[in-house]
Length: 152
Image (cartoon, rainbow, N blue to C red):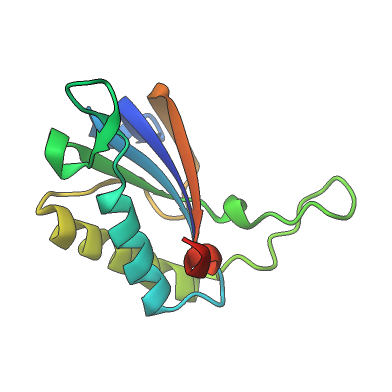
């Protein structure tokens, strides 16, 4: 499971011109789910996302987590995070989970993040053509991969 976490001052998702989710201060999370991902990966990543201390404190240092700043999350499913680009110029997405696995895991991530934050999670629509607007604050962008969790 991969996540691209972006600290934002605002972010929104539109599908066919309609806003499906929007937030002010918080995280835009692009989530890629791989066929090999497990519930352990899901739990680890959800806890990492909610615990990540990248918001400024009174000294301007990145010491505060999402809850400390009353931040929100916009969660977007993005299978392209598993693009393989080694051969040729057309990416392969063979490692990305198929919808029958990815949709339940995406929905489980939403529920877990809602439990951990005690807030409604804003979302896109799985598999839709989404238009994402954001103001990346900093910019702060962090890439997390559950296959690297033993190293962190």
